[in-house]
Image (cartoon, rainbow, N blue to C red; front, side):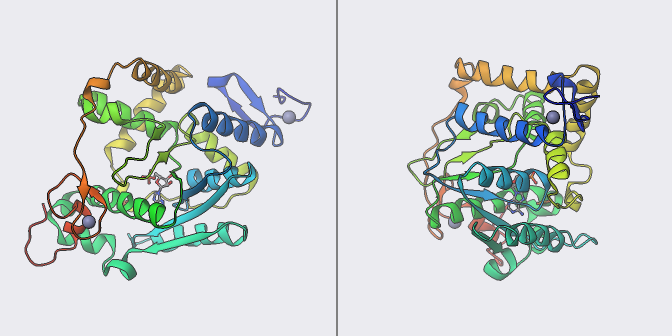
Length: 311
Ligand code: AMP
Ligand code: FES
Ligand code: ZN
Ligand code: ZN
């Protein structure tokens, strides 16, 4: 198969776009698609300072790479959760992120180390609190959101960018529809605006890009990333949903994008607007970050060791 744009052999075929491209034109196409999403959803402008949350995986490293290529002022943040899982997961993913950053000395790179800053690793917190014993991932999500918001605000960044791709967004949407979590559905978007009470602006520039497209970009451009999934993610419902959606995509290319774009369209038309609750937020009495809970935020409650008050 030949590249659509030149005579070179195609290295990557995208059935959903009816497009096959060579090793030169595929990365070009990928960068253009990302730039289009940034502009279409008014994510940020060249003057803005962007903090990219990098996990050491293909999506977030590809995102950081593309933003730097496009000339954005993008720094990286890695959160070391201290997960071993028999494979040294955090150490290995941190090494990938550090190596990527070392090759791009003009970009700033920060590591937030949970154990060093708060005294415990994610597995240690998860074992200690009731909520974490059954679901370490839910505690992990809470911790990552808190740390990302803190570093974005303390570092004076205008926006936080994550590597969530189309497959992530579609799996989340599918799960929310399956359980009719209308509040979550209403809040799912490529851009979450900053709130006046201290939530940073959040964007997902890869929201229309398939997971296999970011993987192809990383492979073709030589980005070294961690292949392993987090050991706690094994058996996660989101992975099951991704499998089901991929099966549908296989039989009918374009299904995932259609589902997602259709959702954004009806959302834009105001279909879910009544579901958005205006929750009153106030600063946590310990860390100052916005919370709807009275007193301490859910993150600070994780670190209370004696009372067993955390739920
Ligand atoms: P996940 O929740 O693992 O699917 O990751 C979604 C996005 O969150 C990634 O694309 C990254 O942008 C960000 N992320 C995940 N884990 C980390 C981490 N340990 N440090 C910084 N960012 C992360
Ligand atoms: Fe947080 Fe897996 S990355 S539990
Ligand atoms: Zn070509
Ligand atoms: Zn707090």
